[in-house]
Image 1: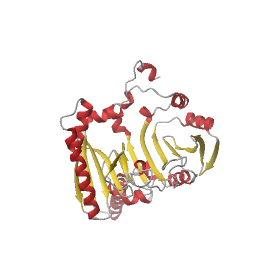
Image 2: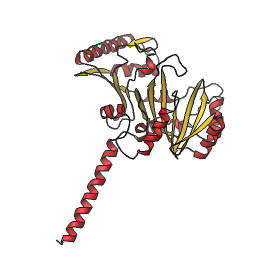
Image 3: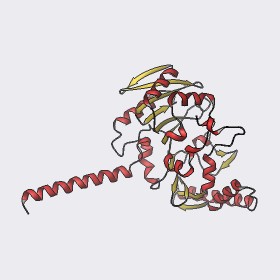
Image 4: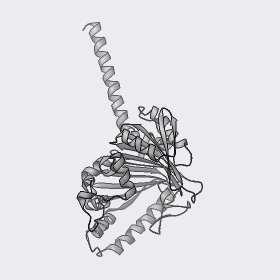
Length: 333
């Protein structure tokens, strides 16, 4: 083999290896929408495309409130149809009784947007604008807070209702390096590896934030959960023939993980006893199936809950309630 031929083959092999490595890193990297989020106490992400395909969410007629309908009419954006990915950063507020409540949010939305129409609408409702990193930031008053919104690209929008502009600036700064596969917040760098592969939706960090106003007990419908709100959680929804829910609590030590596992197991057993044979309709039967499928497991300092979500139950969760006298054709206009 000629020396020039060997050199050519070597270069081609190296290029192919580099390309394969880049593809692998991109597949292992967090979604871009999540990588753009600023430093935070928690992160939530969802890929809505599989959910839309499974539940036909975009085909359900939805009656919108007048203000939201104005937004749709002005921008042409309908969330049920046009939104593909969402990523939220949760920021704990020092004053839980302030305008933001206990938690403020920064968001990145990916979907199908008409940038010109959206910019015109934002200009019409903004109290002021700012130019940062070559992007216009629109400051929109909302319930005593300021929501800052900026168009990152033709298919991506960012927003934040934090008290200062620091977080929306951080998103724009990260957008400059978005092509790097492992950029992102310290929380994402520390725990994204714990998210199961091919998860459709996931959350990590202090997921108890919205459930605990004062930093003490986590509550759902007034019921205290046997979990510590300051603990780190990794929750995910995945699909492997069925929709699988997985919630992992990373406890300070094995004793704390055992206590959480035992407490949650007792709570599940109590729920099964109360629900046994008392399901009166399909919704209650789906909830009973969900509870019956749930199980707790301890792995060293981690307490792990897994469960299977019935497809019909998931369909009902995302379907709007029927409204007497509503005309679906009018709702879709």
